[in-house]
Length: 111
Image (cartoon, rainbow, N blue to C red):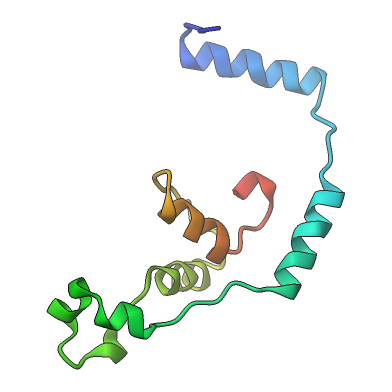
């Protein structure tokens, strides 16, 4: 069902509806399961031989492997520099996955 409206009016109405009937759903069991998975198999990354030998990297590295900045490193650095208070936007795809995995969002409203 398509909805056409002035965004200011529509959001004002939606916010009013949520105030009258707040969302009460909790995901505690799901979050516990995710925490268990993370403890068992945490995400990690590194500059692998496969990456170093890739055609793209060969054109750029030329013996400077220690200078490589992986996307995961950049996202972790952004988190550290902003203390988790950055506004993050990504496209849909791998960048979105990296942001979700390596930026430590402060809560569900921040992710």
